[in-house]
Image 1 (cartoon, rainbow, N blue to C red):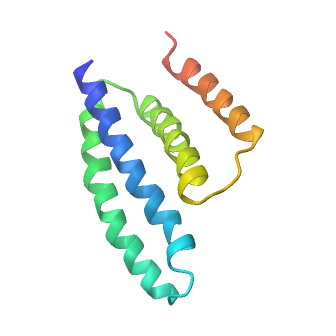
Image 2: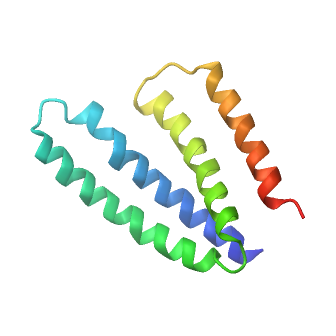
Amino acid sequence: MRTIALTIGLLVGSNIFMTFAWYAHLRDMQARPVVVAILASWGIAFFEYVLQVPANRIGFGTLSLAQLKVIQEVITLSVFVPFAAFYMQQPMKLDFLWAALCLVGAVYFVFRG
């Protein structure tokens, strides 16, 4: 259980960095040249990989590859929705709920039996 908790914790941290690397420049660097946004995103993404690679190495074996991927997707949506709402000031849509319910189904199928 400790391995799974550590894997999930590292993946949450990784996803926070990933989300900022992929999307924060849309709000914060509109007036900057695209090359500046690319370099800033690469710099942030470095920390994503510093957490993501060990997370997958630690989790693999205790979790299957499919389980790691589904956990990653659930975490991605769990991080992205608050980021979109609070940081990017995007309106919440009912479609986010439906997407979350689809992920619950994915978790069920990948972890059953």
